Image (cartoon, rainbow, N blue to C red; front, side, top):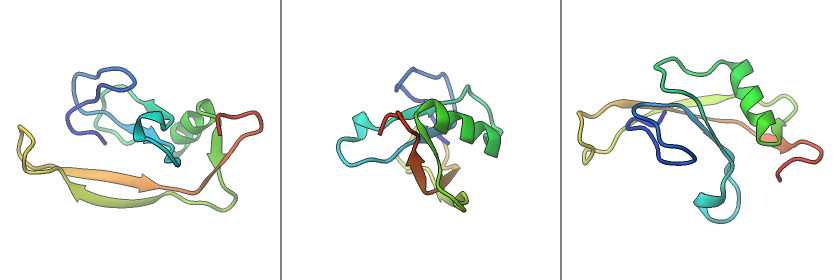
Length: 97
C-alpha cells in the first residue's frame, strides 16, 4: 500500500494499493497496476486480474507472502504500518515480459 498516494502511472489523492512486477532494469520501467484509493487490500482474484492485465500470472503452486513495514519518519504524517506482498510470477504467452 502506498501511504501517500502515487504519481505513477496516474496520480491518486491518497492511500492506494499498487502491484509492481519487479524486473531487471530501471524501476520506472516496471509494469504497475494501481487500484483506486481504498483501505481494503485487493483480493486474490483482483490481484490475479491485475497481473493478467500486465501480461503475467502466478507461477504454479505460488502463494502470496505478506510482511509489514512502517512508513519512513520523514513523511508528512504520523508513521503508519505498510503491508507488502510478494509472489513468484510468470509471463503469459504474448505478455509484456
